[in-house]
Image 1 (cartoon, rainbow, N blue to C red):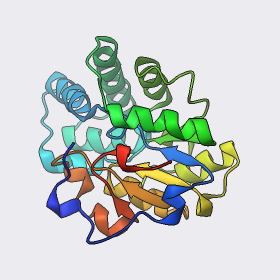
Image 2: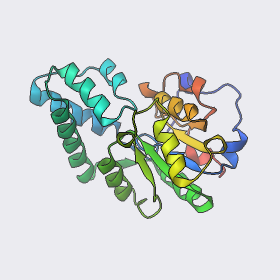
Image 3: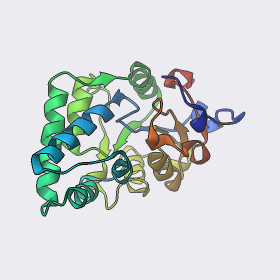
Image 4: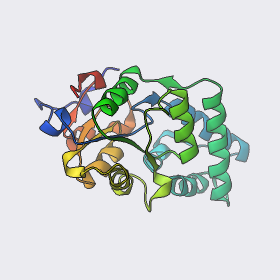
Length: 229
């Protein structure tokens, strides 16, 4: 994957919780699969349909947000009166790409989920809508491994609020302060830290969503193969 200098830690060892966590909660997009290009395509498709345009800086409003939050932001950017239609149409465009076999798994991430599941409780905490999470877990062949996932759509606020991580920990019965969160974005790292978790950041190469993440996370790794659990 190759981490970039702006998201690398300075002489920081893995904390004890990262080596032996009570449980592990994984983000999904950017950690287990590279779906950001497909989200970009889906949003651009909808923008084209309504005669609008989304620029790079606009995406900062979407990272970690739940569907209600990013739909409102996207409708505002595009000058469209119906955020619900924007959200539904974007998700439809996204899922069509998933089902067309265009999802790129992150092999080290998928392997880390299986390792973590073999030793203790695990869950997914994602900003994606529930139907997208379920589809990705099936594509990644993790639906028989991951019994619990939480979408930001199911809690009051998306990332960087702690809600989704607190709910994931509650559902699998783990103490956030003794458990590990795996994230690829700064907003996700802030969410897990606000929930009291130890956070390992594994940023996608060149991802703007990870800028500043090293200052938030407890450790940064280039690949989840580096985690000894």
